[in-house]
Image (cartoon, rainbow, N blue to C red):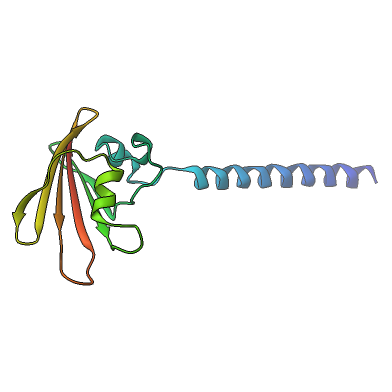
Length: 136
């Protein structure tokens, strides 16, 4: 009888430890940064660097060999999502310059980071592509 009680106590303690480890792993997974968040921070495009509470998720993010950060966004223009909202959300202060028939470029500096935004309109019904190149 005593041996059975010790065995059950050991099994119960083991099960509690395994369950606890699983819960810790799940919590860390839920609270982990997205892979592109480092690039967003270095490009001064992370939502925590702008006070509005709104943000857009990049569809691509990379750091080039020269250290420049390139983020790519697609704006569908649905609801209150628009290029104008994107510009306001990320505190883009540089004036727009027309650089092509369907292209506008903005350039500014935010928190010591030089940012260039290229906005390409692809036609009716297609998302607007925004490429951000930032030099930290």
